[in-house]
Length: 263
Ligand SMILES: O=C(O)CCC(=O)C(=O)O
Ligand SMILES: [Fe+2]
Image (cartoon, rainbow, N blue to C red; front, side, top):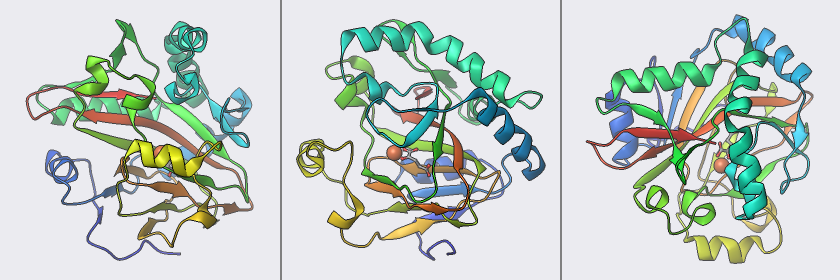
């Protein structure tokens, strides 16, 4: 399947401030940069990630990850503590997995810092550095169910979450199945209360409970894709091979404020 032809999706040759501004201004919902990392390096990074080893998410069974998402802490103080204790070591783990190539998330952080005058920094929370660069592995036949990503749910009543104006998903695609594995999006933005009600006891909303998605992007190896994570989105099941990505969130708090990244 090709990308849905829609004004919401823009394909660009390089990451620029203008495209980032259009994403922030809601002019586009998805920004895709093919060959953000050379396709030739994807195989080596994929092998490095697989030998580092994926472990299933605490709260999303059948989805493997290296590193830990703040979403998994589910506000449990002990897990929050564990997350922060391992944050920098997990960044290092990802760097080693990508070696001898730079970790694509490091490259992304540098590039954003270069194009955004106030800079791009690693998100802190409770005075501590967060982890960034979670690698996700999705098995063939398994979708990532529909959800939106809201920092405020996991870090409620914090200045860091309250000050966010936009939250973007950032993914570098390291190993994508030939068939399937699209990032699918719905144009609606629902409140977190409505989302929590719809997902019930599950980690997200099963795809058969929603109408058809409004647009979809089919990533290729080496792509960087940024998207509005406050819209409902899902990953469609792939065929044949595991789907490996390196991911983050990018937070926007105003034109004069630094952008921040975290997982
Ligand atoms: O892997 C993808 O294409 C998107 C995954 C996702 O839900 C996210 O990065 O927030
Ligand atoms: Fe997401």
